[in-house]
Length: 281
Image (cartoon, rainbow, N blue to C red):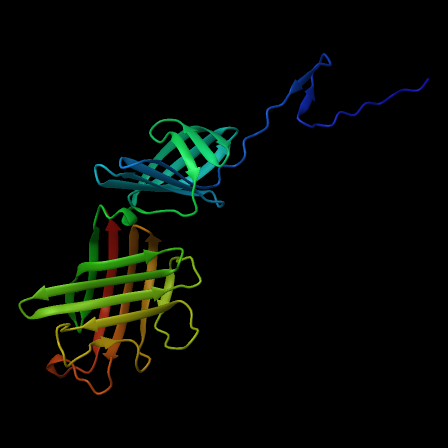
């Protein structure tokens, strides 16, 4: 007598105890990617679910000219997307959000509280800075030749993916205006916390450029910077995000043009104890 041995291979079908076949529902495809839901002139919500398990989210109220950003971690459990929120507008936070999700034809459908909607796949992430509804607030401070100056922020440009940061500040009092410019380059990127130093060598990486001008209205003096005579200087980046910059800096700046003399006969500027703590709100 020959005994037949049957082997069941799982191909989306399972064998029940009674020998009946039942279909096994396939698990959803991962929602990893960048997604946007928009209502023209009213609101835009953009969500990036990164492959390292982190997420960033920007919700813009176009009619009310307001924007909120959040960040944290994400994971899926079956057809449920679980998001742990660790920061809101650059400040620490702690909450958990759960959404049921479906994926079809390049669209992500989320159902839950507060962030539901039909999202289309997009190629790039945005930040609240891109909408221009707020302002950079916080601290830009340094001691210049031993005198502390709190600069008013004029311009800040953050490109995390492009690995660049530009900060410009000015200060005005009865003695006139002062101007400072700080620039770091972490190419090829992305920009991450670390140390960036003055390196006037072609091809150098993780570089820092500093400029200080004690009289930006002057037509006879070009200011002090770090491009000549290889002066020391460094910018330590502690925290970086499209809407949040924290760090410290110091540098010695020499005349930008050889032979020029600064106000009061100064031949260099010594910038120490520099601090940056800025948030876009």
